[in-house]
Amino acid sequence: MVCRDLRGQKPFVTETLPHPDFQSVFEKNFSTVNGVSTGKFSRSFEGFGTAFGIKFKPGAFRPLLHAPASSLRNRSVPASAIFDQNDVGKLDAMLVSSTEGNEKVETAQSFLHRCHPGPDPSVSQARSWFN
Image (cartoon, rainbow, N blue to C red; front, side, top):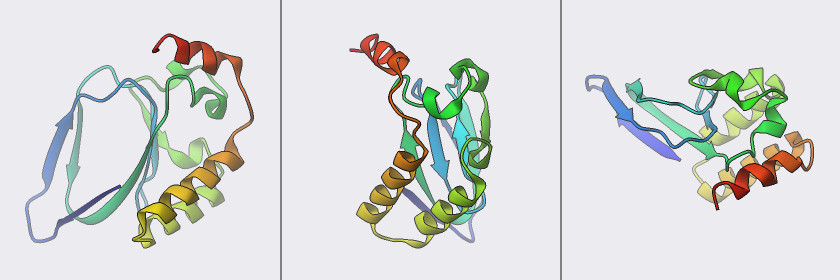
């Protein structure tokens, strides 16, 4: 979870070299699923806001995607393109309004358990490459 308060300041641009994994970031009116990036990532921040991020282990997002992982390489899509829009809206509202870190983690875990279609043998195979 990240909080920022840049009210009254110039926008701040951050640049990172991301981990080679899928991430889901929940922010008020800006929740995304981010595929594996092969280059630098830049984003401008301004005003006040919070973000809650979920980093997925290798292969773990594929069962949720219902498509090859490469379909999101170097791309971000709205979280509602992957998950049910109503569920994403409820999760966004809770994650943005709560100040309790443990509550946010439990809510996100519950959300993912409801969305997860079950075991996928390709996940175990992908993880074995990273051990």
